[in-house]
Length: 451
Image (cartoon, rainbow, N blue to C red; front, side):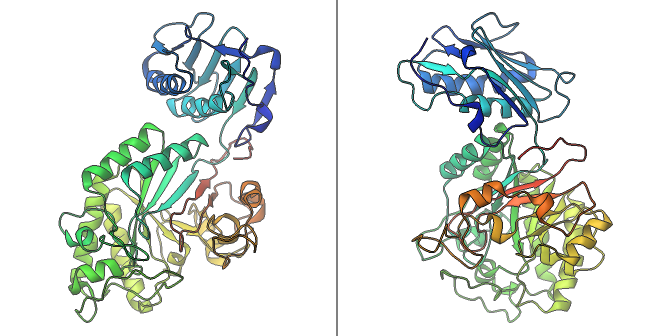
């Protein structure tokens, strides 16, 4: 038996629905170990094999057909695991069997299996023996990355995707535009990226993603069962666009590029009474939607202090049907609820610090799903405590344990009677270098679980 000690099932993150350790059943990964899978399970099997090859140095193969003793089997069986993202993992001295209804469920189980391997190999590799049964409590579990204020390269975004996928998050909210920059190529408005994306907070070269690079990121995320939701922030948070195209400004004069640090927000606005503004937004959404196969586009719509209220209402009335014509539903920060008559497909995302909100409660009563990212619970760019040298305090000091232990369902009272929730662990989307969030909404009928 290898000398390495596998991880304990009691320390899995996130905590599974059920875990039963069996230390006497630890499974040894050797040079002869292979992963067996067929059909749709094969890509996940190859992912697992790649991880095992990199960690162990063994030539782990992916083979078809039933798994013999000494092998790892990935099995698709909807009767055994009816939840689309659930899985069952059984580890014995003779074999490892991972069963799920879908490849997404298998992928989640692989992330658990990774945690059951030793942190350091020592004399060999073993998987902790026992059984784990798990399924997500929420259907949408996301992380946000704010590349608009500080640019992240394609490689850095891929590494971020890898990290969130390890903890079974399944959405990447990519904040692509803001006052400080515009990070995605729009071919019908090329200066958005080449000029609007040329800098970042504090100055520096900035950068942007070509459409091919963005497609590559979307495909890479999909290979990790992560869906990309792009955010194009309008009509506020638009200084980079206004600097790139003066005709989008009310006075026709382009402001300088904005690179300031701190909490400066709400000072910019598209000219909501100009027809060119709506041609611009329609072009942008059309190109971004064509690159993004997911269901949602995030349109920001928050902190519109520089936009006259009449203009803001008119803007949302014009823009939401554009997304609908492209086959997309809209997510907006919770300020979008100030617009009456929103379709039930619109998803408001709450980033406030109150335990209830009447507009959110009314939206849920109408049938809207909601996404929660309360700043005082989940913004990861807040300081841990007042002695922490880096971070903000505007939403309070937030310890890691506070974020991990946060349960949106009982702690937010706006929607006490509905089974569909959206909860998100947001890491300082407003003012951080890079921000990640974990967003979730509950699937009706799902079993309780810490995630």
